[in-house]
Image (cartoon, rainbow, N blue to C red; front, side):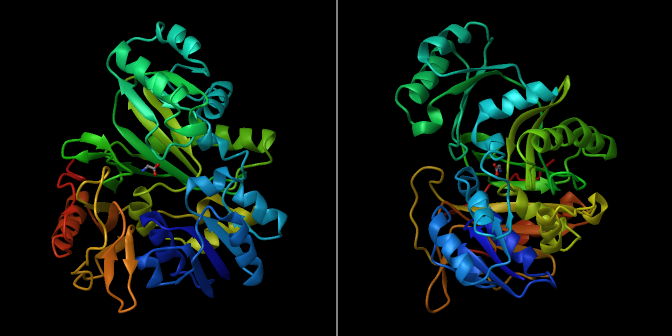
Length: 419
Ligand code: GLY
């Protein structure tokens, strides 16, 4: 098969790495990719949001399958455009992707299907927001309705903070059109987990869960990031938990999407919080997570390309997908200053020292130069993943190897998977 993978993050490096293990693969292109994907596939100089060039390239090269990594191309209907041009695509349609691109859409489906989630209201004016605010106790959560690169959620400890967030979103339009409306939601407390399944629109694969670390600082302090590390499995993960989430969250959503929106094909990602009243859904995403992908794909025992092929053909048998019961840990190395300002262009050393039998390096913000040297090119630069029989062993391997990779101004959390 000829495959075109869309995206340039650590997630896409992990997807590319796994696809490259497939016996079905003849050629993998990545648009635009990074230094990691350049080493195992052919990077194409097309941005992931340039759907016209993606379609033209896919037609010219007779691509058998387009795989969409990030959320923006999904929300803009790249999957639909592929289908209109007779190209198979792994990733849900634009309407189905509203599960991620509109919180109001996701909330209304959850409430209609009886899926546990926080009490919320959706509003599109400051006046309505201020009125509704009075019915929530503090802290309260304010969420921009649309995509905001993980920055659209505010946990407000005072009414004044909530009013500021509301005005920033609805009046100042700090997230542009993504802030045409917002959600006010009760604050929920408990451990969080990202849960993933492959689906062909009818069958749902066994689930896999990973816990990620969103804050930049040790002990979950400081501003939110795209994710600084992750591990799997969660300490509370067991067959009973998986069955509950599969039946009461994933099955209900997939059935609903099938009956109302011509189905959902791809990966469904539920962000859950385990409250004292049981698991509740915080959000849905329509893609793999980053950095969760870097811990879960090394645990996938089935050929990923074959799984994707079954999803797009509508022939997925749930048991075909097998997850290892081993433990996996990934730690992100970032540029000092991230998620604020940082510098790029620093040369990275130590990438060849890694013993690849027990550790994997996934690139994110990196660039490969003509002389094959690799430099930093983003906030999250790379991640180091290890799989072992326990979280402790995997964690030890990750940090041992991570200390051998060096670039100016590198930063990583030292408390990932310390559970
Ligand atoms: N790590 C969370 C996400 O990918 O949205």
